[in-house]
Image 1: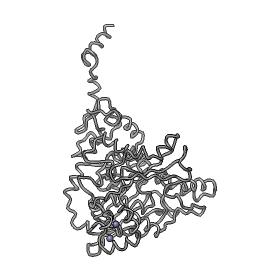
Image 2 (image 1 turned 90 degrees about the vertical axis):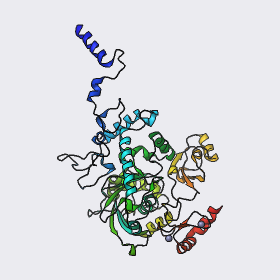
Image 3 (image 1 turned 90 degrees about the horizontal axis):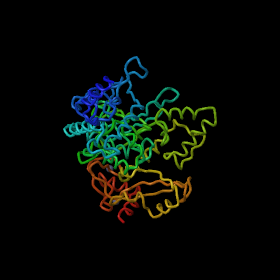
Image 4 (image 1 turned 60 degrees about the horizontal axis):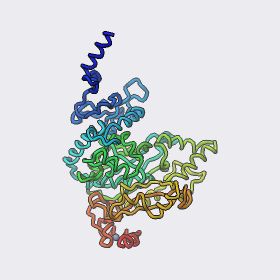
Length: 490
Ligand SMILES: [Zn+2]
Ligand SMILES: [Zn+2]
């Protein structure tokens, strides 16, 4: 009894008489961070160790190959354990962190803790990186042509060689936004404006992502609104690609390939579709002297068909490739069926003879050419499928309500029926995408014909298409701009 009373008294002493104060014993066990602010109810157990350091002194982690990804925050599996030397993607911890995120501004609009510790820390790294980019002396790199090779590692042919790769040439001055949207995405065979992507440069681990999601002043609440707005559901997986990124283009700057890579042999990672994480490694094979550079985009070579959209990453595709060669017909047929339903294979004949090693150079060139000759994708209006679940939704479709409320000036909501799912009826499905009739910003643009980022001026007719000179303008006029221009002038 006495003992109980003493315990109670000492507890009251520690917590205050009301018991409302937080137990100081617990606080003593908590680690103190040099920079980030923790919510008192947050369990620190699942944080990357890096968050206890100051971002200015932070040294990013490198894997066995000397590569740094996702800002170098993720721990590296220690020697003697399976996967030693590789980044430790602990998805259980990531899930715990996602739940802890509810304590912050994310869901509850918690004004005292608007950003998670990860976002606070990465926000400082982003800011530091932008200052580094601003101070960079690029010399003549923006006027030199880069020959790049992009490879989907982990997917091998029968000889153990990389099955899927492309070789191409672009100017060092091309904006990374255009590089992703108008070159890499169509070059690989992915669908434009469907999933999010991110670059991470191996030498420093810095991450660069689409503008719609991030800005130097974006608060967590704004970020979440934009994620809602973009409707790109893969944004939920932002934390698995480093919690945040330098915006590809914003009022702080338009970053070019030359800002990211400066030397032959350097590499970066390009991830397409957060969460599913189709990973591509880009290597600089050659940087030509200015005298041999044209600035033009050129697709040089390649191998392997593009994996299907909405699959589950490189390893899954490697498994599906194995099944396509299976003697069991039902195994092959399952994969072929998935392919026929995939957005990037829609409308194509996928027969039993489909060969995942096939690559059609002319087709890849045509896809890149079409992308270059079109406006930038509207990041806030990523393609998304909508199913009509009730009668009212059919009316919404016809009167264009719902997503139409998100439109800004000059934007149009495009809706296309998914024919296989039937017409406008309950149970039917359509695709939505926002397109813009506004002129794209010249800073970060490329010639609609050849892809050079240099010496651009707008088409005098539509004022929307950009050309590097009359030669390209004439060529593109005959290649289809005649009709495009007329449509845009209306
Ligand atoms: Zn041109
Ligand atoms: Zn025009």
